Image (tube, rainbow, N blue to C red; front, top):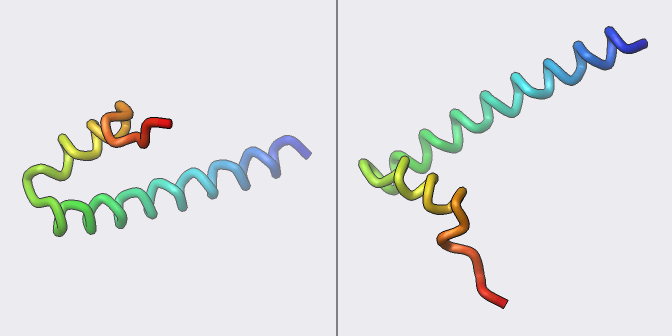
Amino acid sequence: MKEHQAILLAKEIVALDNKRDELFETLMKLAGKDAFPLLRAVQNGLYQKSS
């Protein structure tokens, strides 16, 4: 049933969002005011290993 699958997916998204918040809070404790710029830099591939 599509509705059941949609509800399960929505619940999973909420759980992931909560986990993201927890992880970002930990990052803020570790990196302080640099947490958000660091996250953006990682998202933009700045810290990828070159092959």
